[in-house]
Amino acid sequence: MHIAFCTDGIYPLMTGGMQKHSRLLVESLSAYEDLSITVLHPHSETIFNSPRIQEIQLRPINSNKNYLLESYRYSQQVADKLNDIQPDIIYSQGLSVWAGIKNFSNRLIINPHGLEPYQAIGWKHRLLAIPFQHIFSHLFKNCARIVSLGGKLSEILRKHCAHEKQLVVLPNAINLSNTSAGFQRIPSLPVKVLFLGRFATNKGIDILFEAIQQLNSTGYTNTFNFILGGKGPLYEHYRSQPQPANVKLLGFVKDEDIDALYRNNELFILPTLFEGMPTVVLEAMSWKMPVIVSDVGATAELVDAANGYLVRPGKVEDLVQSLLGYAAASLEIKLSLGNASYSRVMNQFTWKAVAARHRDLFYALLHETQ
Image 1 (cartoon, rainbow, N blue to C red):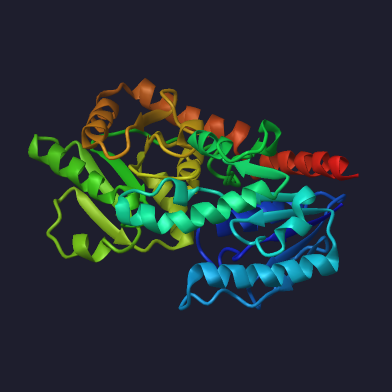
Image 2: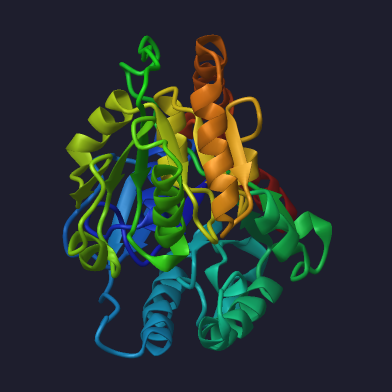
């Protein structure tokens, strides 16, 4: 079966959750001898090293021009190549298949990922999201399947499905580290709390700093150490301010240093305001970290009372109470939370398992088109 995989970027040549998803899913699918894959991407470099993966390089989106117009122009290139190669199944990331979409409808799978246009916060961002909502609604009406990462994202997508069969839940995933299975941290005080993400309002970084200030002002300075990795529009603002002794700003973190952060810290926190299924949470769970995360997107698929704390987005008091609850928990409970995180990833969210579910979807759709 010939699969055309269409994306506007591949990790690490382009960074982001969708770009990493593209890389890892294609690599995992290439393990199947009954699949041949053609990847359409905007990079001049050859990325994959597999006889079952062919690559078609396209002109990239010009980031200095209007994003939607450039995305449509990019999709025109994609459409031309799809008409040339005539694949059995087409898998589209985001807006990659748009121009001429009706020519591909019965064999097209669209993965819109985090559905940011449907979760915009504040009137300005809601206005900016309107064109994206209209475009995605058009795409959803002209495809065979829409991929949801699960949770609240499925609730959003059901409003745009012609029928329930059109929606399929396929979660994000990771490759487990060879060393994380036998790893066991020893919880201690102060609790080492790790944040990895963009220093941006949508990631709740300001909410986290408010929670830290509240904890420190009420006598818990020695209870927690906060290690915050990442950069973004708010990074310089916080870096220029005096920080408490229990807060360390790491700035940009290289990929090769991330696993050490998961190993050397104890509790992962992500007070994001909207999300898909964050890879950083899966990675933290794979290193047996309990997690505090906002109940948005598909995060409830990853975290519950068995392995952490789901909090209301934007609620400082929820972060404070979850942090204090974890700090006060027994050693046995802390270890149980971490072990539950690892078990959940191992059983449900590895690329081997998720790629198998994609392959099943491809065959089901191929059967319908014949």
